[in-house]
Length: 363
Image (cartoon, rainbow, N blue to C red; front, top):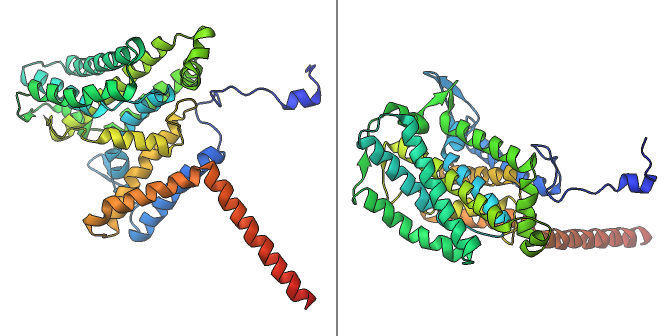
């Protein structure tokens, strides 16, 4: 029997990590990004009525919606890792370069005669974790600002990838590895399934263990977390390693898709899309509360926006401007201050309307 008084029973404390379920309930925080995504999907449906048509051809699903999901897979993986890094108050600008390095390592292993796909994938993942450990060490143990520490590898990492490739674009022919980027399982493209598997694993880790609380507590106040017994350095090291691993998986998708490693262009500027997706998802760059679900919604908003611009027939020179304006609009909708100001304007307009109606009635 509950011995708490009625008032206390209603005011149960809520965990700072938010809902402990895998999928959080729909509330104001989730409403605006989802509405933005629904609006973009509706616009695409108007521009192209067959947008939601999905066909099964040769055992693989095809359609505009499948293309949006498939093309957003690399950025989605980057955004998953970036979400955790940002939640600790950090940033990782090196994920694009990590993609290039991982792709170069895997391509050269294949060209060098490594037949085992498991060894190739393990090598790429190991490189990602190693790069994440380097970033984590610079940030957590040496105290270097995250933007500076990761900027080092953002610049040097692409040079390392070029050295691995000897300045060339390395191509390969390996059906097993190519499956990572172009294969399908039960008709669903494998990159989409890989994103779902990574998301489920990390979501379980963050919401069904104490690690999610540790990540948010370090992002909110690392000093206070230390006095509470949380090892802030270990937490930061962990999230940078996860970000590196996710970037390596994204790099393998990119390399498998083109069956080659292009150190100059692989993952170029995708770190900015990943950061933007996390911000659209409502995460604060100062650290603290995070949501992997909203980060993936942000990724879909970015990809749907790009698809909408292409399908609308707008001249290419306006694409980036339109994309920027829409992103600013979505961010404004999520701003509490903007919402309060809009609410005040609506209330003022209603009061003036009621006043004018009253004056007419008296007249």
